Length: 155
Image (cartoon, rainbow, N blue to C red):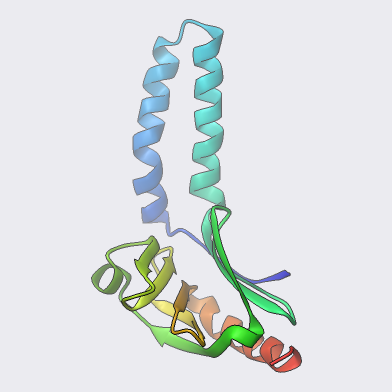
C-alpha cells in the first residue's frame, strides 16, 4: 500500500505536545546520576522526537484497500468492497469532535484523524462507519487519487 497523503501536526500542536515532556526530560537530565536515568532520558527524547516530528494524519491506498491513519501509531484499513463513498468535506475538529488526534466514535459523526486542519477526506463504509482524515490543502488531491484507485479496484 502506498501513501497518498500525509499532513504533520501544525507547529502550535507540536509545541503543545512537546514542551511539557521536554521540560521533564531536561529536569531529569539535570538530576540524573546513574546510567539507567540517562538511558531513560535518551529513550524519552527519542520518543518525543517521533511524536513531535513524525506523527501526522495519513491516507494509504492501493487497488484493494484504503487506510486512514494517525501515523505511525493508529491505522484503520478498509477493503474497497466495503467502501460506500469517498467524499471531500470541511469539519471543525475542536467543535465537532473535541480536539485533534484520533477523535470521535462510530456511533456519532465518525472517527476523525486530525492534526489541526479542517479539510478532510471522508471514507464511509457500507456498515455506516465513517473515517475522516484531515489533510488540509492535500485533501483535494488525495480525494482525487482515492477516487481513481477505487475505480481501478474490485469495486
